[in-house]
Image (cartoon, rainbow, N blue to C red):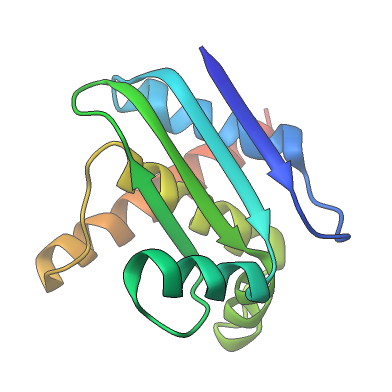
Amino acid sequence: MTLQIYNTTKKEFPEEMLEKALLLLLKNEGCTVESIVGVYCGNKMMRRINREFLQHDYPTDTITFRYSKGSDIDGEFYVSLDMVKENAERFTADFQQELLRVTFHSALHLIGYDDQSPEDRTLMQEKEAFYLNLFITELNR
């Protein structure tokens, strides 16, 4: 099992907390980690990845690459800390909670959830909220 988290920015962020959050979601979804790499970056890197792999010339909050099928998870995800900050301001949310939400969103993609249809998007949003509440409850114990 390898779970690696990298911060390519100069911004500080709670690496250990994000690792615990990912493991909580994966355990509750009945998954195990084969290899997961999480890269927290800025808009410049995110835009380059989005353009190169998805042919979209703009930054986004997260991009996920899933390499496995089934419950042994192998993949990588990228999260733009700049977009997380923008989202937090736009939705009047706490930065740390938005960071957790986007991280949960990335993990859900890694295990096979999709958000292309309105129904799938709603399911993912419900799961994000569930895991955010569960994790905050666990932290406060």
